[in-house]
Length: 165
Image (cartoon, rainbow, N blue to C red; front, side, top):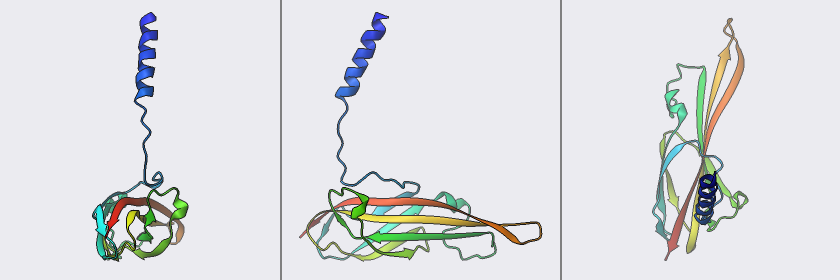
């Protein structure tokens, strides 16, 4: 029993002494359902346009391709949207700081954001959001659509970027 008390006390001391406070430059990611890769340098030049490459994978890729060219399956429809936001000064305190610039439908799992410009020097957070939605039509035995259901995957994208002259 005494060994158990000593071991427990020792374990508590280790756990509390190793508890380091971590500091993030952006709030906790709420939507983290897609695997993605972002190609944007860590350091960029102010007022210089950059091409940002985004590549992602979704669970829905096994159901139907990201680009829905083949309309032979009328029971499923897939729509992928990318939302672009103004860069936010680091550290970003809350999601309420986000200002949406625009949104676009994504036709491929690899897409580019052309002419992305940081307008002033400093540390900024690049912000984006991908929403992947699939709609399933369900038909009754007479061939009449009786229900529609939706499923979605969402991914927030944050990256700290240093902007220099």
